[in-house]
Image (tube, rainbow, N blue to C red; front, side, top):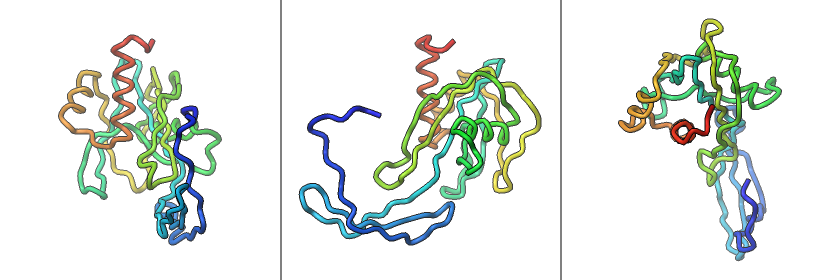
Length: 192
């Protein structure tokens, strides 16, 4: 987290809060808030989600594991990195990311490190997305995606990933940003 500056804006005061829905994929609340200058926003909508996890997974052979799946919100199929939500049973964010990688690709093991933490939209959502870099992963078994997931695994070279990004074939911003960071670290020799 960035250290505060003396001239940072002050937090808003929540005057009241009401949940309109409390379902796993649709928890939304409406807050009545007062800004530091005194103005009141009578309805400020916030979507709540559990933390999300992503993995930039690189095989022993140097291939980046991408998946293609249909996304109903936009009605399209695109490339993505393995990703998912945390579960109540997960002991850590990394454990959740390892689980998601194994479920979606059948790959695991390797060397893991945090890569990036992002917010999909800090104005409207309360959760963060934690991306891990998994290097030297190996095939450990069959993929076992969830019942609502129909995806295809695509081990992809670094050059191919750059081409996919350049052509706009990856549009999930929470996946593009970590891949870009990985590629920058790779190109500047910061990865071993």
